[in-house]
Amino acid sequence: MRIGVPKETADGERRVALVPEVAGKLVGADGGTEVVVERGAGAGALIPDVQYEEAGAGMVDDPAGPYEADVVVKVAAPSAEEIGRLRPESVLIGFLAPLTAGEAVQAIAQTGATSFAMEAIPRISRAQSMDALSSQANIAGYRAALIGAQELGRFYPMLMTAAGTIRPAVVLVLGAGVAGLQAIATARRLGAVVQGFDVRAAVKEQVESLGAHFLEFDLGGDLEGTGGYARELTPEQQGRQQELMAEAIGKVDVVISTAAVPGRRAPVLVTEEAVRKMKPGSVIVDLAAETGGNCELTEAGQSVVRHDVKILGPLNVPSTMPEHASQLYARNIHSLLDLMIKEGELELDFDDEVIAGACITREGEIVHEAARAAAQAATATSS
Ligand SMILES: NC(=O)c1ccc[n+]([C@@H]2O[C@H](COP(=O)([O-])OP(=O)(O)OC[C@H]3O[C@@H](n4cnc5c(N)ncnc54)[C@H](O)[C@@H]3O)[C@@H](O)[C@H]2O)c1
Image: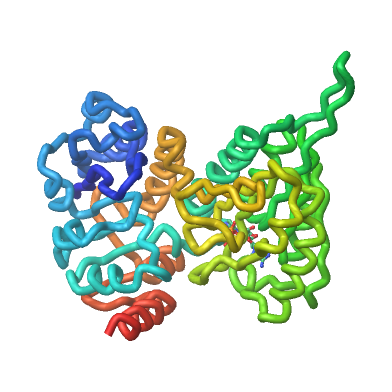
């Protein structure tokens, strides 16, 4: 049984799906598993080929080489060219954007390959070690707090100096999921006064346990949906939320926004009107830029200044810490492979909730219900 590791080709993607540590464990686990790595696959994460060789992996020059393996492990969703390399007997694992990349998912299905999306792994206790959404969101949250500190022309902590006292910066974190909680913890460590906000009432305690103040807006009940995620707000609730936010935001130095609803455009929490109310020199780091942004004025991948407020919409933030991002991602992949490999053979047990839940395509069909609906909607729009 062979596992193939291609070099990532998406723009700006520096991560790699397997690091030498994990490749070595897979090869060492039993005599039956081989790992084949494309030369240079680890370069973006500063992992030299020789480390893979020392771990027992085979190296190939041809980008198509890893696709001849039984299981291909990737980080970013495959390009059209990469999808073209899949065969009916291939198994593909990676971030496949199953709810937003309908046409690509359809194309993967048509190859006959069996594919598993890391985003679709059920968020249950047993699957925590495979939860790549969390491992990568943690990095994004940490980094966003640092970007905010770097871009703000003021101190985060309170400073008492001979020249007088400097008041601490106020950081408001919107969306207290995995990324938001890490942003709160990091901004607190840097000495800022931190506020957190989320529509799920359950996170109040978590925000407070990190030493932050939880902002409470009455939007009409708890807005927790299925699987621990938030529900999409009604237009009335969204309008009310934007009004309350515009009032709260005037006293804030940095906004870090992470609010998301799976498969949907990110909710707009910060309107242009709210930005106008912010102090000149304040900063917004919008981690939701990839899915439309939590701020009305965010431009994906850009840093813009509007009404004297700097608004950043960074993309693929985990890739800016490629070494640790790859290490954690590779461990998530390893845990999933552990479920799939029995005594050196690939054995996919579709009665297992994790395997079945993460499976997107199989035998030419899109088998994941929500992904199928997203693909049908994408096909309807494009035709
Ligand atoms: N293995 C597990 O059991 C496990 C692992 C990870 C996460 N989870 C659950 O899933 C939750 C969310 O995970 P995530 O961080 O990937 O979520 P996410 O990235 O989908 O969303 C980020 C946050 O935005 C919030 N949000 C959505 N709409 C909002 C709005 N209009 N205003 C303010 N906030 C809004 C969500 O409630 C969420 O906390 C976790 O906090 C946890 O409860 C469970």
